[in-house]
Amino acid sequence: MNRTIDNSDTAVELAHRRGDGLEILLLWHQRDDRLEVVVADTRTGASFALAAGDGREALDAFYHPFAYAAAREVAAGAATPASSQP
Image 1 (cartoon, one colour):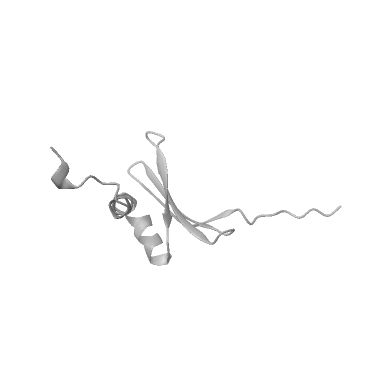
Image 2: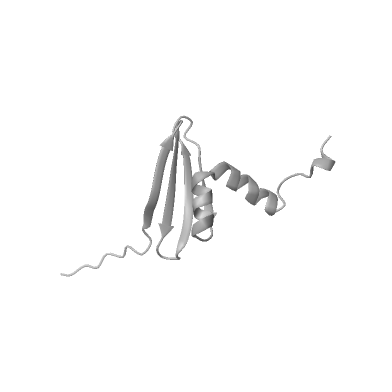
């Protein structure tokens, strides 16, 4: 019996780095040709993932994930304007 394994949903690790309790991965999802950066704090167990557009954005997100996440929140209007803060 022949069996075909569908690996089209497998994420390919393009880059990985560790430092100061953080692990950061740059992943490529083959199925939908999407780039993602995953950040995990090994000390607390907290983690988050960021969708990264093209290759340049993906590298920015990989090297500066917290700044990239904050910039995307501001661009989406999630941040509170400074003038309305008490």
